[in-house]
Image 1: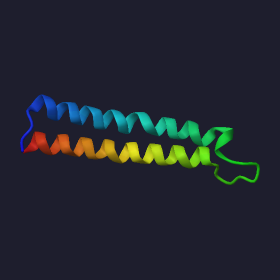
Image 2: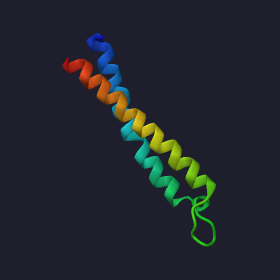
Image 3: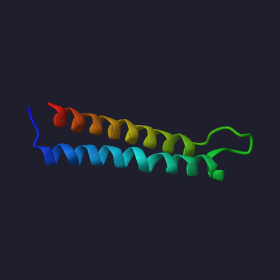
Length: 73
């Protein structure tokens, strides 16, 4: 399957955008007082956000790779 260049570029842009946007959000989540309980243990708030961020970043990386491979091939 081949993708037209504009579509490959959209995939690359979407992947890069995802990889740029989520790390600052992660830093804010880690500093949020709801992220840890009074004993310092991670809360569900932190766990849910870590899963959301990691899943989004994995999908963003995959999207960028697909776009790059489509552009190269």
